[in-house]
Image (tube, rainbow, N blue to C red; front, side, top):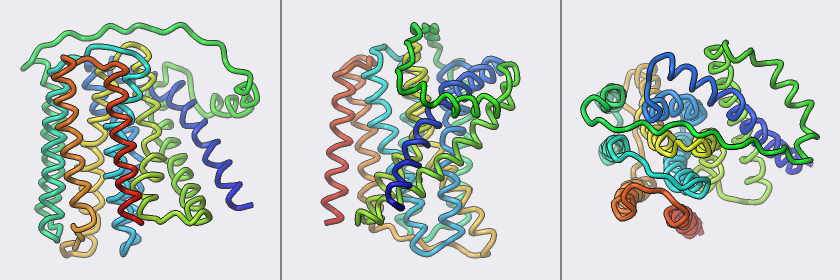
Length: 346
């Protein structure tokens, strides 16, 4: 009965995340970015990335507060989410709609992603996270945001115009969810209240992602799946759903660059702030440095680096185009990674 309830909670949470992201999160993000006169890729790399990465941040904070073995769960979720964002989200974006992306913002995000991975290795290779590691993480993210906001002035590039897809008729099963849709519409305000809608969206995305995580843990315990695999796979998948939904939505609108910037920006946010802020809380609260174990995570850090290098090579070969061929490469790579994780656990 508990297993069935957890599965139902997973399915409902997936649906709610999709509806909230589609109807309110992306539209409110568009309104805010236009108000701030931000380019699509800048909005994707900052506002969308920070908002949709809130679940990873909350999980990491909870893991730090609980302490002990839970620290590995927080780090494992973020590392697993980073692989999911890069390989699955970009792969899904490539399948949804073929497009050509501007190399300038892609190069920027890949550069800072590599620097973020380097910072992660720097922290774990030392075995002890100090306040200087935390300052380095947070400072690097501040530099990234500054670079995003000013990159177009340094390396000019054309903005991709929005192309709306034709509305598709709702499937029959969706009619059964009309009471749920009515409840969602009641919680949110009108379109002109985009700040309110954005904040409510982020809060509900975080709450629903927590439900996903808790439900996934129940399922894994009931089915005898090791929690180490849960952190790198199920938890990573559950917390990355908002990123995937947001990216697919904007990709359908012809903004593949914004979708990819969202995936990379989310990874940068997860590593630098998703770990940096919880570590800062723990170090300030305890008044001492935090010991970390690098043996279990080092190999996955190198996989993160290999994935972004591979992404750069693929984009050079395709001349910065995403299509189904690129999608197959990325999704296939993620399947290989899953096999690797499972083999490690056996």
